Amino acid sequence: MFSFTVRSFFQKLVTLFFISVISFLVIYLAPGEPSQIDPLNPKFTPEDLQRFRQEFNLDKPLHVQYYLYYKNLFTGQLKSWKDNQPVMAKINERFLNSLWLFIVGTLITWCLSFPVGINAAINRGSFSDRTSTLLAYVLISIPSFFFAYILIIFVVQTFHVPVIGMQTFGMTGAGKLYQAMDRIWHLVIPSILGATGGIALLSRYVRAQMLEVIHQDFIRTARAKGLSADRVYYSHGLRNALLPFVTMFGLILPGLIGGSVIIESIFAWPGMGRMAFEAILARDYPIILTINFVAAVLVLIGTFISDLLYMVVDPRIRL
Image (cartoon, rainbow, N blue to C red; front, side, top):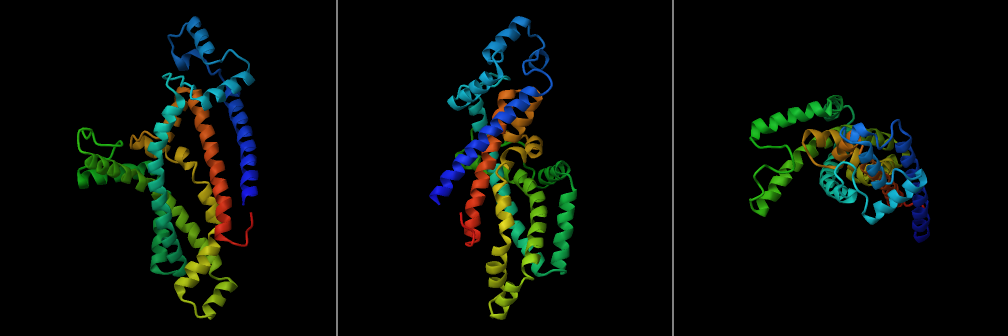
């Protein structure tokens, strides 16, 4: 276990290094210079542009820029081109906002997808199976932005409460309990919206995996031994169907950044996805590169967690 952890850690460090180099080159080899006048400020004079290039080390060779960028990133000195604010401070604030949205949406998705998918597989062809299949295809087919507006109109007209933003305007002077309840309310609606598509897709995947497993010989043997249906399906069947989902679980962490751009934009939620989108439009390269680096770290952490979970799900797998 210890040797695997150390070996995997160094392998992922090497992978992260190559990702950082490639992403840095992609940004700077893209058409147009990072310091073009028009995207930054049309009133820039050539002297202002020269000072800007010196301030952000754009007048230095590419390999020196790479070194200074990551040096400033890890020392907290990297500044945004848009507002000259520390990049890590901005990302930390947005990361925490997206984290709660991600956690709640993921919990809703995984807690509902498995019961729905398992029930549909066990009762294949039944009314519940056909109903869940129909709802899944409907939720997959409806665009998320369209469903978001329907959900907003329904909630506002039914409950007469605001749903946009992280908190209701004018709640800053209320008690901590009311502020916490207001924050939870604003969190629930976008989380449900983010979970609907995931529930539809994951429940279909769970159903397919369970159908493949419950017709195998070891399930028939377990039934022949007189084991209860719950133990056969949930202890023997589900555990053998979990391996693909362990891989999926490790790859959901990057959803903190890329999976919530539309939801955060519609609900005016100040999260990572919205910040990345705004940084791309503003050509704020320090923000773009840092978010890409954070996404790479999340992917590597997720794959490492998946490697550990494989051993928990299937004891035959050895690290």
